[in-house]
Image: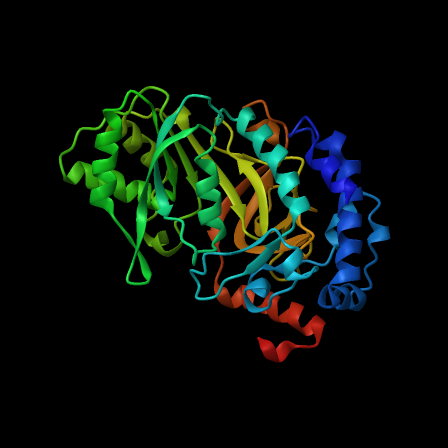
Length: 374
């Protein structure tokens, strides 16, 4: 899997044309590995008559068998024994089911340069110590969710002094502690060090709302930063526009919009998508994105809305080379953003109905000849 390492150790994280050949080679090698080591994935490729040797141009990426994320929520697929994996993580399971994804050691070694390069590129890395308020889950031996791993990892972009977790485990369930969060922010505002807030945008909104309700005055030190990861999910009905959220963060905490970062990713596709200074997600060299027609799954041209298909050769423990999310979105040319990054911009509209994705998952199951499991 040296092609994967060569791709993820490249120096320019947004130079797509220069990385195309390396990306194709890494995808072909990744697909061949999964065919050899995962019987279920081999059956899917055989049924679709797909041979990784056919990956000769970037257009050929659309021919890679695509598995819906819901498929991984219904069936666990591994391409290596569990004892060889570095770890296993799960999706959040807000729909009642969750994916269980294995991470191999080669994946971990490839992630490190990716995260560091993009962290430096987007101003996340600092040598100055910081206090952290994590608007997410407190790590727990029984919590294997990918978002918990991600948020904990984000507290190392600046050396952590103290961490406060807004979601705490009580009686076997996580509950938000908004009053404790407000108190922690007041306490950290009195520290000479900056504060970094990491977590779900929904809980940032609720936390800001609670601070105002309590009549507290909080002005975080210069250099403080907000890093948003994850969506609104079960709070989608209360979602607010980004600009409304940013304006409230500036008013309540004194954090300017330029110090607010956003991340996008999935446990089945742990590529580190960072929003640019205009808060838009540009595609880095470590992945490619296709937009597919929800009815036919055919790739759509730039600007057309469809299901988001994420492709990356990062993982060998689990066959997640090409996965279909349950999100609708569209791509547009990077030049339209004006931030200086020329790679395509991913715009995310939101999630489609479960019935639509269920059809895709059932189709994948049928390829395995195990449709009754769905």
